[in-house]
Image (cartoon, rainbow, N blue to C red; front, top):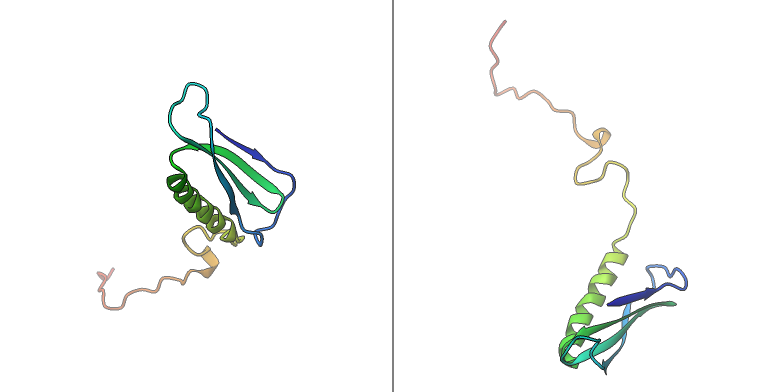
Length: 105
């Protein structure tokens, strides 16, 4: 289970970072080795638990932090109509292909 506590809004200029990974008792009804982790971004904190050995969980969480940072640094506003193709005004007007002969009327 992951809990997110947002204290303030930090801009994308402050990267997420893995602050700590510590062994913790297994949650009720679960077995195995569990790790409690803390990810921070400025005043924002994400706290959660994952099953696995310290090294395994650290590798997984490092990947999560990298993806969070990529997601939030790419958050650049796009102009209207820029969802995969240019807006109509930016598209070239189709020109008739002179190599194709059309039947005379």
